[in-house]
Amino acid sequence: MKMQDITGKVAVITGASSGIGEAAARLLAQEGVHVILAARRRERLDSLASELGNAASIIETDVASKAQVAALFNQVRERFGGLDLLFNNAGIGINARFETSDPDEWRQMIDVNLYGVLHCTQAAIPLMRGRAGAMICSVSSVGGRHGVENWSVYSATKFAVVGFHDALRKELGPDRIRVSVIEPGAVWTEFGQNVSEALDDRRAKLEALASEDVAQALVYAFAQPANVLVQEILLRPVLQLAP
Ligand SMILES: NC(=O)c1ccc[n+]([C@@H]2O[C@H](COP(=O)([O-])OP(=O)(O)OC[C@H]3O[C@@H](n4cnc5c(N)ncnc54)[C@H](OP(=O)(O)O)[C@@H]3O)[C@@H](O)[C@H]2O)c1
Image (cartoon, rainbow, N blue to C red):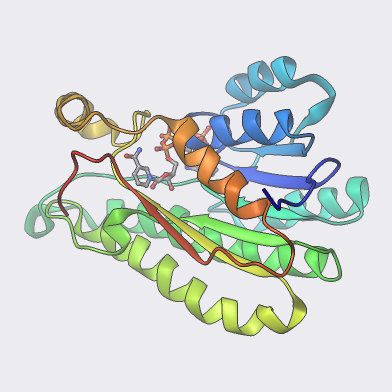
């Protein structure tokens, strides 16, 4: 198979403290990538970093904070001189019927799922220019392609990520920065805390994906030859027929 050797590349992974981000960090580290773990829960990051040894660095970051994101990428520039992969994975989902939902919760989701992606991406672009095979990959969702009832605002943030990526791909293509989006269906993670039991039942029925399945999709896209853009990967459990 014609794949890029990704040994020695540098990746920032947001939301690396659990679920898909944690699995992505493990798999990229196995492939020889230096992973910069960014999230808020320090103890989770410490335990993953101690498992990964020299392959990982921690930069504790709240992606909803413009200042913390700026500090993250300043450190990346100073310590590594550039960046090959930005994995915009941090995200939250709060389940609610729209009519009775809490606007403060809309804002939390928009701050992390949309502003987090925007801040990180804007700060990363100058560090990626001129690096062969550089890629920005964001995690949207099947809910970013199809509206999901009781997840309306979450769906809106994930639709926004897809639209943003399609425009950004056109802006950054001439610089050979690849812009890719992954849209998972149900995955076994801590996502959806306010409805975790109901989600666990649904995940069991659907034989939900493992975080590692999504991590493999990321590495598949990243390890393509530098001129090959895997623009979009929608992956779902075979039993998940809708949305
Ligand atoms: N699980 C699914 O079924 C599913 C389906 C489709 C899409 N997704 C998407 O997949 C992505 C990863 O979620 P997951 O399923 O792996 O769930 P998860 O285990 O809950 O992981 C979410 C990650 O996001 C981080 N995060 C949340 N708010 C943050 C903030 N303000 N700043 C920095 N990091 C923050 C969390 O870290 P800290 O709390 O430590 O900051 C955590 O590492 C999300 O974008 C989610 O929307 C999930």
